Image 1 (cartoon, helix red, strand yellow):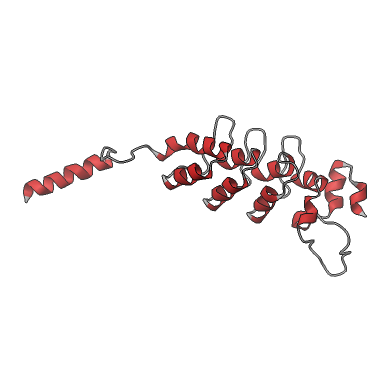
Image 2: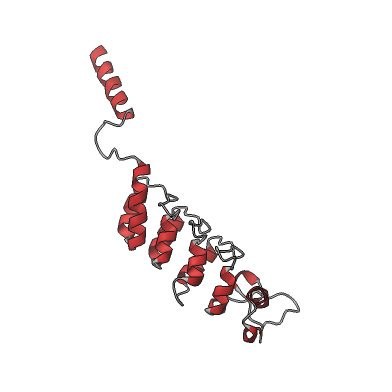
Length: 183
């Protein structure tokens, strides 16, 4: 009985020190793999790495998170996986780009990433390194048309509005353009 107890204690100690077999790779070491999988749009690998404990907010040498890396490639399904795992849509890299800001400027006219970011708490007044907001770029690409306009009593329902209910003229006045969007 005493020998059995000592063997059990020894094996518990060995496991706590990381030598009990199986996958002993620390979760912190999975960050670069997660970033590469997200950058490549490999949802299967992203899901597997998250399941193994990869930190969803791991960053590369440019400060990019896996979500930012997925956003630059417009890998919407991978971005959705990362957001469901707790990724912050407002986390910025060193160039001051977040998934939300990338969705308004870097992925063309595809609004799916933009809508995902908005639905998950994007800060619509966030600015990039040029002090521009995503609202300006979203209005330029017509993304405000994809969201149901917010209506208030006495408000002109025909007047276009930017996402999150900010009037287009607010975004327009910051950039000094888009006069036709005001109708």
